[in-house]
Each structure stands twice: as structure tokens, then as C-alpha cells.
Length: 198
Ligand SMILES: [Zn+2]
Image (tube, rainbow, N blue to C red; front, side):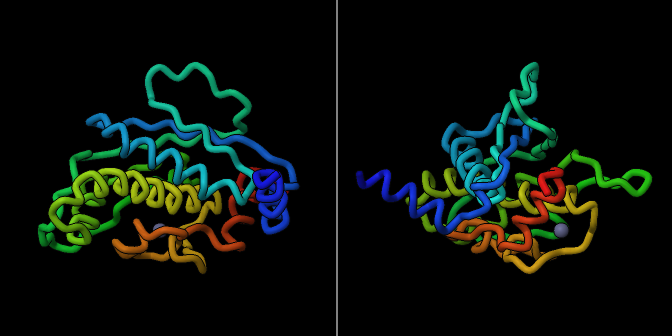
């Protein structure tokens, strides 16, 4: 009964879920394979970020991709410089963007690039020694949030940013890993409009 009640409460606070739902395939290509718990958290976080828009994220590794299920769109993510988070080490603030998308002939392409090494260096100083496992897991969350930021540029076909903490020109390390950070309502609608759900 309790789970049913929780499910009903969930629907009440997320009315968008009552609207049409769709899938977005996110294909991940990493130069070095992600640690299992990093990958697991990346998948979980991306699913959680997109759920309010009624979008199911189907994360797959790049090779071989031969099944897109019911996804209506595909985004391709390349993770560069994958490396472990070095905890308790001061690092220079990440210079340049953690992620980017290419615009060709005025069209933002669904090819997302993430500097995974810079993301790891960005969040490293937030952890102390002994928190290596936590840092490894939360690297996945940080990567998911960088991917979400770039997905929004593609879905809005714009270099403009938004109101929410994840869609700012620069996103702090703590915002990349803090619990409960997600899309704001205007960004939920950007996702739906971008995927043709309106
Ligand atoms: Zn941006």
C-alpha cells in the first residue's frame, strides 16, 4: 500500500508524467571505460534528470549500437580523458568548458563532448582522503549533469543558458555533485519542446 501511495504522490507532484512519454538514446563513447559505479550513477542521474520531462534515457555504450528501442532521438556523447578523481588534492579550477557541442551550418549537433578528466579535477578538492569510493560514484553524477547541460543546448538549438543551476554558463563543482539538483520547470519544457513532445 505504501508504495502505491508513494506512486500516487509522485504523480501528483509531477503532472508532466501524465503527458506523452518518449525515449532518448544516449550513446556513450569513453576513451577509457568508466568504473562500474561511476557508470551506474551516470545512468541513474541522467534518468532522474530527464524523468520530469517524461523522457526515458536509454544509455548505451557506443559499440555495437544496433537497438534503439522506442527512442525518438539519439545523442552521442564522447567522454575525453576519463580518469579517477584524485581526492584531497588542490587543483586549478577547470579552465574552459567541461562540455561542448558543435554547431555546423547553424545547427547544434547531437554530438556532445565532455572533458571527463577536467570534471574529475573540478570535483576532486571537495573530497577528503578515505572518500575515494564516494568520489568515484559522484563522478558519474557530475558527468550526467554536464551531459544534461549540453543536451539542453542541443534541444534548444541555442548557446543561451537558462534559469536552473545546471544550465548556467559555469557550473560549480558542488552543484555538479550535490543531492537534489535537477532541471527547473522551464528546462523540463525545453526538453519536451526539443523532442517534439509539445
Ligand atoms: Zn552552456
